[in-house]
Length: 189
Image 1 (cartoon, rainbow, N blue to C red):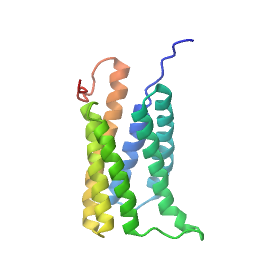
Image 2: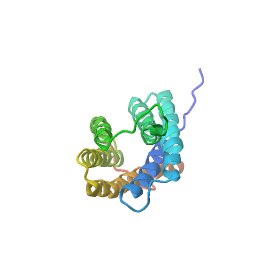
Image 3: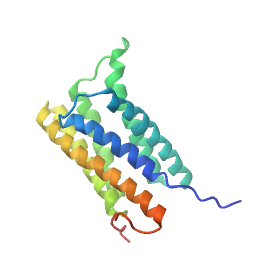
């Protein structure tokens, strides 16, 4: 069988996650209302592109990448569903407390994924560490009806999303040039 080099799907998945996270958290921080750009990004780039990246990670044999990208891709699609399925006569809107529980479950999942990054580079550790904090802030803010905490979470989420964008571009440029252009911190041995 022929040896085929597969492309790294990480930058695609990280960009889908990062850009969508930044857009949503610009809203959470209070700069803009929820707009179609966030919803579209949630479905297509945060959602579908990450699922594609996860499937490609599967092909490479990367269980962590497969789990992360497909899970967070479907997270974005589910979140858009929570926002828009209530427009159907068949479904009721989800109250803030239950949205908080939804976010708390994702926070627990993310905390375990963060543990999985401890043998990886510092860049991915920062992304998952800051995402764990983001989910905790959003969960508490929704469960306790604390709009101020959700706004603080928005600023933290912008940092989280920006870190994923940086990591995506570091992986892409470092591979493209065959040397470190943007440092990501060496993995632990």
